[in-house]
Length: 166
Image (cartoon, rainbow, N blue to C red; front, side, top):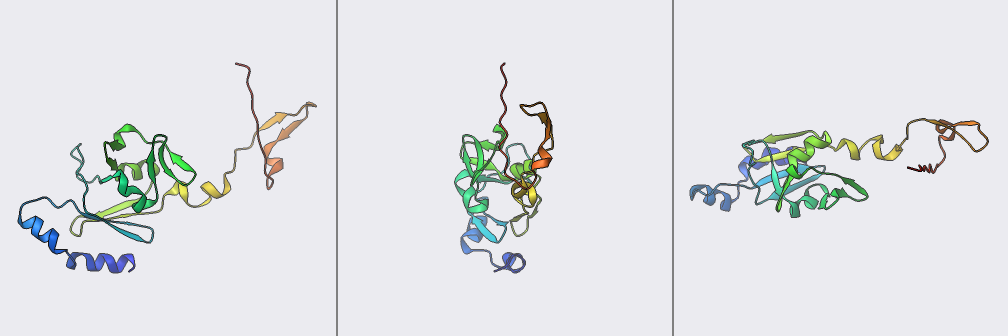
């Protein structure tokens, strides 16, 4: 099912358990998160403690199903890329998904009626950011004192080693 069809069908397809929970007075914390070509149904989310009802807190265990990230001591990691996360984005078993998206410059929208959140592409993981990995040009003298520019090696793999005595 594509994203548009899902969003059109979601308000009509409310599960019976959700309807019963609403009638019994229990707050409905289930949401559907759309990312890429996935639609992930989360049964449990948490409202933001800072009174920002537009923040989406998900369980850390659900994060890999949503966007392939995993929370590790070094940050939120996906394959060989780890992004440091401030302590404010993680609290116990919970992770602030919208806060993380804001940190990365990722666009997102929420539809409160259908309880759906749609996240766009992560700029740091798309486009030329990871595929090109171009270093800025700089110039240094070689062992013979001739000035060498990094740009003169474009198109070739280059290993730059630096050292300092302090």
